[in-house]
Image 1 (cartoon, helix red, strand yellow):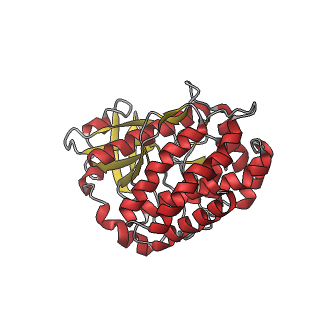
Image 2: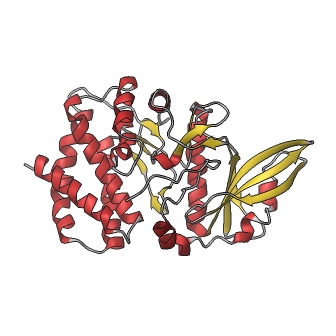
Image 3: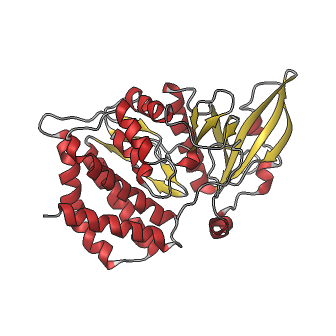
Length: 352
């Protein structure tokens, strides 16, 4: 199970803090990005900074899974400044930084004070297998964003940003940790959710190994549970407006801006979804952003109709989060057990 983050001052963004030493041990072999990528700043990174910018120092900044991260201290025309640099490796790494840049840019376009300003992504000239994400450096304090402001800001994002084509999904690959999610576009939320969740559950079986009970439950889950809970959202005169969501809004991806005292989010894996899907991770027992935040959010963005299905839809959406976590933490059976429990509960209640 994920544990609360250590009591430190967060001066990072767009990287996963590692909450437990056991998780670090499990994934440290996956950090195959050359350390030189944050020691010798490539000219393609420099070209994205203002002209006459000098790099004074590049200091490793916190620990990030599958990436290297650094704070760049610079000087531009005699004025000091700081930037955040994340580097990745290989084709998967290229997709990770391009997807993150797209996600952060979309959020920034409608809520510019809610995320650090994304600047660029690209590939190292000197090492073509190394790719980078660059954005402004924002100082952040430990602790959760305030209950009085955070849910309202997330609801505001959901209200203000929708897809240009009116569809659900995304044209970019995003990542849950190092797990790629190919979204594509769908005309209905039910079709998007069914299509992509089926692919993810198949991947879970490959990564974790076949589990007969999950296979047996998957039939009624896709054939009965999903239609029962999602189809009413877009039938009988009802409709859903695709909302831009962060996509992985647990407490490790949210903090408080030191200067303004306002909420700030990062490490986005955005797509256009039913806004309630954002709350799925707020149902997870390991997430410090929990029930009080869900209740406060609903004051600013009331549940979709039929409202009586709200909690059950949340359980359905949390099941998809369990699938993703079972893929990501494949060496920890706890996440598969959470997945099994949620599948059993939903199928028992809605398979008739």
